[in-house]
Image: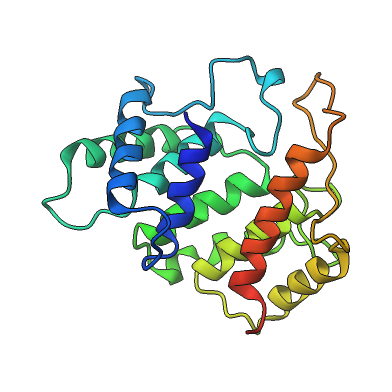
Length: 227
């Protein structure tokens, strides 16, 4: 998949009145997704082996497929493009038979896909409680259970919980915001460490993951911090 395009579409879907990504842009991205969906209904970041696809940005095909579902948008009505509808249904079938990953990102995106599909909040209560339980004692979230909190996972968690309808005055949200505020650097970024796929060596250049982590932290704060 074309990573920048997917991220742009995902962000655009959460801000209905935004103008940075036009409706025509979203249609072109949807067309790209339809052309590159795997036969089994999934999407893959690339054909490179997992050790060459560093997490969390390229966490798994599960995350790529969840991102693809969100980028395609929410079904509007019966007149929706049948290609997009069929693609989303194929992806949903693949996700239903795929063992969920234990990473915070996959858990959050699975929750977000269900929220945007119109699943009642009551039906998601257990899943939301489980997602909130991943929060560390310092108020942040780690990319995996047991890992230290960082800006990427914490910003993403705040972003997902806000879109899922969790109020900003909830203690867990306020603690997450406090974690990000306390850990921001003077230059505006957040400290991040590279993480590698099992058996691979983490990147020594911290710039890419710092950009991604700082972007998610910013999105999380924009959604959750008091105005």
